Amino acid sequence: MIHASDLINVWHCPRLGCNIHQHKKGQHEPFANLIAPFFDLAKEKVKVENIPQGRLNDPMERTVELLKQKKGGIRLRFERDGIRTKVPFLFPIYEEEESTFQESKKKTSKKRKKRYEDFDYEAIYPILSANPTEILIEMMALDQWILEGMGIHVKKHKIVYLNREYVRNGDLNPDELFIEGRHLLRKSGTPYEKTIDDQIAEYLSENDLEKKIRQAKQVLNEEDAVPVRNRHCLAPRRCAYYNDCFNEDSLDDSSILFLSSASKRAQMFEEGKDTLAKADPYQIEGSPLQFSQVMADRNGGVFLDARAAENWIASLAWPRIYLDFEWDTFAFPPYDRMIPYDVLCFEFSMHVENEDGTIRHTGFFKHGDGRKEFIETLLKNIPEHGSVIVYNMEGAEKLRLIQLARQFPEYEEQLNEICSRMLDLSVLFEKGIYYDIRQRGHYSLKTMMNLFSDQDGYSKLPVKNGLDAIEAYRRLCASHDEAERNSLAKRIDTYCAMDTEAEMIILHGLQDKLADLKNTKPAKKKKAKEQALKQTESTKIHRRKRKSKKRVKPASPKDNDQETAVLNSDPEDPSRTKPKTRNEE
Image: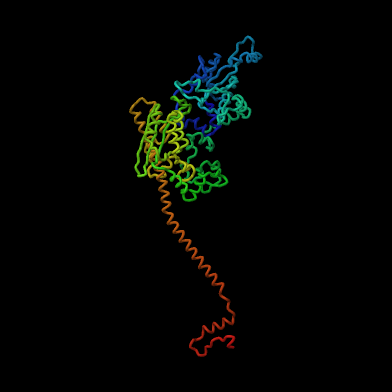
């Protein structure tokens, strides 16, 4: 049996569809934390009561029996041509019963009661997003095709999605948390002019759905599909099967496939331009990072814009404050003053490095609503002066402080002051000021630390990355075992402290490389000067030789005879005579 979602996955990426259909690997930890079952909250918004509900693995016979009650249903299972789906909410349209019934009377007996197939239906889809986009049209169109095959006509579609303007105040209010609508939204957040029904009709008219389904079935029947790179591989997140499809571990560090944000890197690879050094300037976008990648490969593996790096480091003020936060994202606001898909900071680590070389560390961790304590502990321990060094500032620590300032305006001024002192260490690598081909196109904190340190501190930790930290935090919140909670808290704290230590190691490592570069410059200059002097001297000698050759006058045959006679004569021979001048003659 094939699920409708399998077909959609194949349409996006045949390889992905095969992998998920065959259950080869588990998926990522869910991006957003759910404090309550999403569907239950959506039911409160839709306000359904005494409506039949489907069950797991229901046969079609049960779905038909439930529909005969003429109440519609919740999560009813439908099937057509071996493809199954579940529609979240399906209700008969009673307000149009009379007109619909009049049309159906032509085909049915006047005495027969109206059957479930005679109704038009409305399908309602809850969407766990504040920005439902047109990518949902494929799913709704496929569902409509399946239901039409069972004689069920879906006339209207509606979505229920998160209200981005909702701010929690007291108990969670589903009526305000969700918005109902008949229009999908653009990525900008503005609604389309066409309704969902119009967009579905347009999709079905432009696509041969039955042909697409046949082709997708063929792919799913194959043991495997050829991996092809497309935009779904890395967006919105790196696919769980990416390494299975593209074994990048076997690639050389200088592979052109590591060229950052290059739309034609696969094409260049196929054309034999397989290294960064061979990149075709007419086939790349020409970003600063791409330039540094190409130059690094051409220069032996490393590129460093020393002047730009020195200027950035020179802008730092003492003490140097290395800061890192850990947080979780919640689809529904768990506490007051929070909005849908807001974040909750539960951990920070701060290393303070003074000009005399002394270092102080402060850490904070708390589960539950620890936002205010988080802010107060940070303000209490952070120095009043000095640069605040973070990694990925705009999308991480700075954004988190802005969000906290919105939630707690009484601390807005102090938090904004910290933001004003922030400098983003990742800029040095994001903009290509420094690139080492061993980065293989990445510049995460962990990647860069491995290049500037002989020991990989992360590999020894039970929590090795941000996703591990979120998973550990969620386990901690769900646990009732105090010993387990303490153990998980310690693991998260150690990981976060490693992040700020890594920031410090990277900065010092970069300073060491700049110092090494300065020390090698005098020797290089001396050698270059000596080579230039040698070249100049050689040129002068060559020029003198050329000039001397030009000054020699060719001798006449007579002169040659006289010169030969003089050279061969005995100086003591009285018969030797001096050649006469014209006056003597």
